[in-house]
Image 1 (tube, helix red, strand yellow):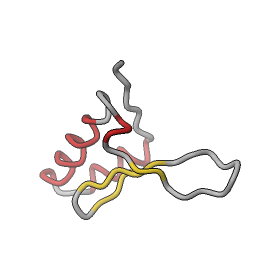
Image 2: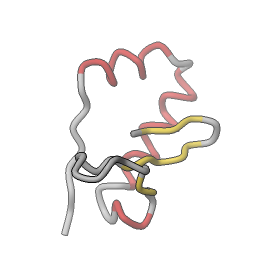
Image 3: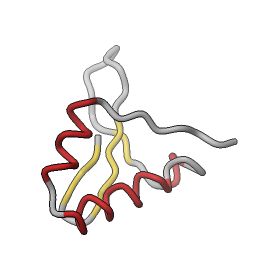
Length: 64
């Protein structure tokens, strides 16, 4: 099953602020999530009943 990615406007603006090589690396790694997201992400500790959040490590950066 293929998944899709959706970026918030805030995420898009943040990616635009990085150097082009860094933003391309981040985007490339995020694209991997479309095939099997749970192979790459880690859950974040959240209070009971809160919406689950996950992180993806991309070098020194984290995508939530």
